[in-house]
Length: 153
Image 1 (cartoon, rainbow, N blue to C red):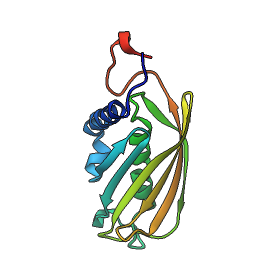
Image 2 (image 1 turned 180 degrees about the vertical axis):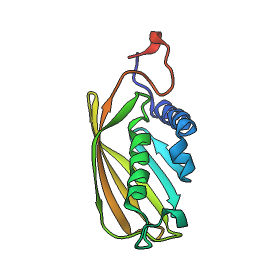
Image 3 (image 1 turned 120 degrees about the vertical axis):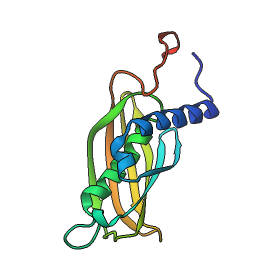
Image 4 (image 1 turned 90 degrees about the vertical axis):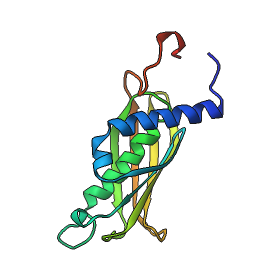
């Protein structure tokens, strides 16, 4: 089979994203929006709701992590191979507040065999960096969108 063209890869990334988003109740329940997706890339946004605030009246770090993790998931599944997190870390750099619109931009750094490394930058509506996340991915069996055996590579 020949390598997919950029257009085919983009179309596949968009279709995998739609399939994942439709099945991802958590991402939808938290109000995350997919702003862009491409091969090895995803950008999601989320508004910090009042119920996202912790005892310091700032966004709970777990919700910032969840936004970054969701962007990571969409980026590493964009080539239609079922892919999961093998490990990840986050550095919180400044607080997010109620009403802030956070954007998580996930970019593939390397994809080698079944493993990849992705960096996710979480920023607020003014462009201030809130957190930096790094995830390691591992491909598992199967595809996000079923692929007939005759065209698998």
